[in-house]
Length: 138
Image (tube, rainbow, N blue to C red; front, side, top):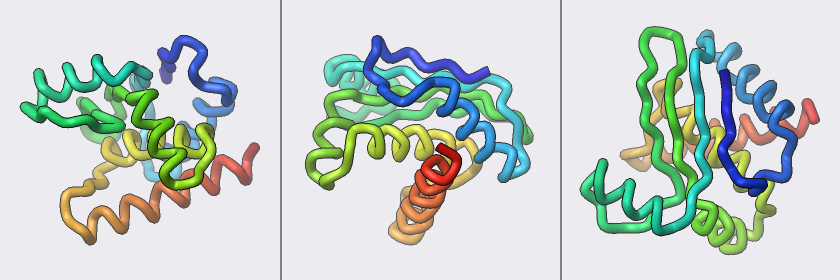
């Protein structure tokens, strides 16, 4: 089950997004047990950052990954404010930046990290692959 809690923030059809995310998961040899995406404001994101990560900074996404074996179970929190800011900064559409963050959370659940420069490069490449997959199918 994939859920999107966004108060009409997402313009892309949820059904298309769920099919796309499931195709990524299947390609990696996993299944989705439960995946929830929560689109929140900057204050909520800062509060989550402080409470769970001991960070006093703004961020665009936080993923809580409870995946066991090959069954994806996770919740992701995406800052609508940071998403819009990043889209503008990188001359991207809101839709494209949304796809990047949705795939970013999922990629963490699939075992990809972004702590080192090498990991960041691989993560960015995988995000681009995911975004391209969405555009091919839709």
